[in-house]
Image 1 (cartoon, helix red, strand yellow):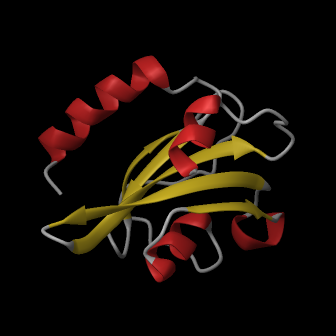
Image 2 (cartoon, rainbow, N blue to C red):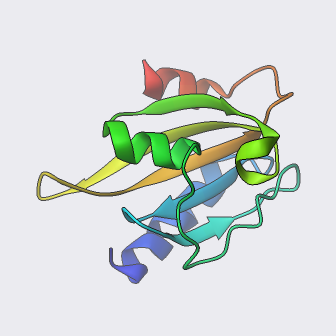
Length: 116
């Protein structure tokens, strides 16, 4: 994916995605963008491999939107993830994952509308 395009997209997300939600963007093998929130930090770095059991991994496997609660034993932190596949020319090229603290009760309506 084009880094300039990702940066432009992330500038727009800064205005609509609350600061207590972390954002991870990956290709099909590794992360290349991560913005931790003030609530949760999964300690992801660009170049880190996508671990089995994460919301990102689930989305890449199913090629569909995924919402899941992830236990601490998977990546070291409990979280709730919402992940969307990214396609380029009808080919899965990665995904974007929104990471929320598991104890956050009210999911933003942005995600509820987009997921349904």
